[in-house]
Length: 447
Image 1 (tube, rainbow, N blue to C red):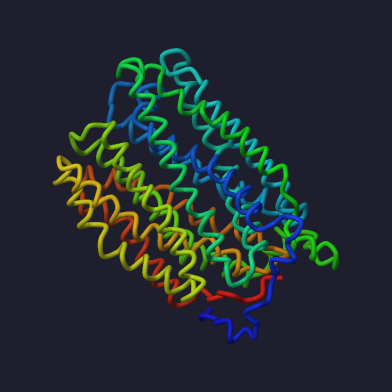
Image 2: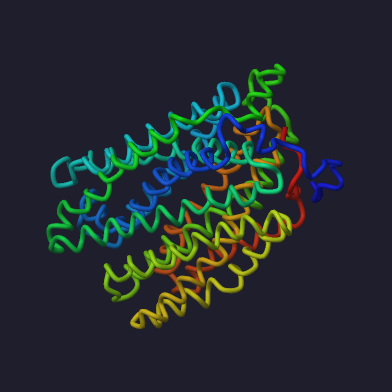
């Protein structure tokens, strides 16, 4: 599948829903509602990553702390592994019932699982049942995210005028960094108001329970949203896919497109996201003597800079094309990850140096994520869009979600150079696939 430009498709740049077409749900309200739920969902993954060490202390056998941490991090990967199933279920339902309804379903499922982690008794109380239930809750979170990404990204792209899809999707993409900042600040503030022993025993639960407030806000905003104009147009013309899952999986061209997008966009997107924040935090917490609270604040500050960078990257993809921004981000990651992680582990005693390194890690993340959120929905046909997007994101998430566990295990075996080689390999492979096969649909019709 060679690159396809807008000119080759014959699509006029103005094709697609205009701002007047979306009067029932103004674009700014659509973006705000999508972002509110996205923050809730990303907050869960961020808070779990931030508190992985404390979860390992409370839910896994205490005999071997290193193994416990790896198990806690690996249970995060379980959520990514179950994303495809969530993508299958919620993606197909989104193509049959509408994008908006899936918004609410995934939000409730994610909230239940997140709050459940905050209330779950530990290993000392439940024994082996504690880690088993924790993994079940992580599976629920993975199922929810498998549908959430497809619903939110599709909803925003289908509301956006074609020349601003990257910009508005960039705001949605920036919610990953926003949620990471919120999670780190929630942890830091909780640690500041209690002693270390209390936080280790029960205080870590407070940031998880903060999700109750996020749920309430998200429900208020999402309940006011209307269905996407593209989906309403499909329903009006009777062109909805009666069995989107069967149509997608029964067509080799569709399967090939999903695999190409998963390898060339989604795997690098998720890998760069967890590498720039979660993996950097794990390295500081487990491979250095850095103060845990200061590590949280440094990562939060780095993620804060990623918010505007991600929005700018989305806008740049409108101007220069999605592929150029994606490939630039991957190339920067390939060239800088290993030296930056090596520098982080050798200069962690300097807070200024550490902050600059963490900001450097956010640059490839911002470029890739900022362009990816509009790239993926644009590629697939409207009638099967959510199903296809969910599959591509979920398959890519298996590779990206395992990045922290794989990198930490490789670091234990061969040092930081080997550990950082995993995200480098994923981005290098993604760059090659993107250049050779991912179609460029910037500004093309998505009806």
